Amino acid sequence: MNKITQLKNYLNEFDIEAAFITNPDNVFYVSGFKSNPHERLLGVMVFKEAEPFLICPKMEMPDAKSAGWAGDIVGHADTEDSMEMLYRTASALMGKSGKMAIEKSHMTVDRFEALSGLFSTTEFIALDNKINAMRVTKDEDELKILREAAKLADYAIEVGARTLK
Image (cartoon, rainbow, N blue to C red; front, side, top):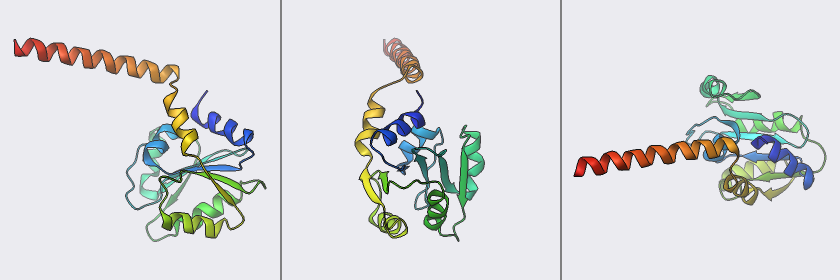
């Protein structure tokens, strides 16, 4: 089961309309797109029913597509209000439960105040424990990568040990 499907199942189980993932490592985990946006907004918005979208700096949109993100991408320029763009896009897709899960341990106070000001009738719930639980449990693709990494690490140790003799 892919990460987006796992998140959608979680949202349905707890009647949460959307999840907004903003930690760059977790954005990569759910989308396959790795970015270090510094102060710019980067995130994946996953909905209980609608299709997810990625929001990123406009200049990184081609990289997001190349990384395999097949969903919609909302690109913002430095001169645009990225939070307002997020609000316009997300509010058109959200249902009526009034709940949004966010990574509370990652989101800055400034971003949270902007988000809560725009989504003024929304209750914000911590998503951190769910994401952490998902990351602990590995699927078959992740296990394959870990096995290959272990083989390469073992080989590097062998080469190093032979070289030191």
